[in-house]
Amino acid sequence: MFKGSASVSFTTTKPQKEVYELIEEELNSVGKTEVSDRGTIKINSSKMEGALNEAIIDGTLRNKDGKFTIEVNFESKPKIFVWLLFCLGIFPGLIALFLVSNTKGEMQNKIDRALDNVNNEFK
Image (cartoon, rainbow, N blue to C red; front, top):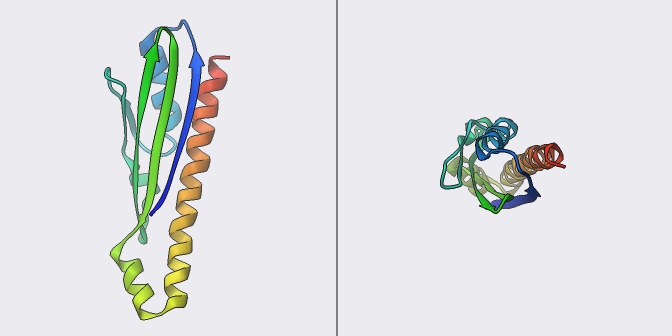
């Protein structure tokens, strides 16, 4: 329901393995991260989940002649409990939705910071 994405591009001559390790290290702030040789970024998003929301985070890494592009997509979805609160009363439901939206903002900030750190490492 509350979706976002972040991306960054940089050029480097460093070995691919070193680039992957740095990306994994930086994105660990949002969840355990693994980058596959095919460029799939898997992030265990349990760090960003709570009683009111489910978090989904994934991404891709493309490399063309030393120019890397990272794209991370994320979503904070209300759990069924939030919709039940909404049915019981608009005010409690709105508060719950606001909290779910805040989690999306937190994910955005952490992912932006991680990608900035990766980008700065290769400047």
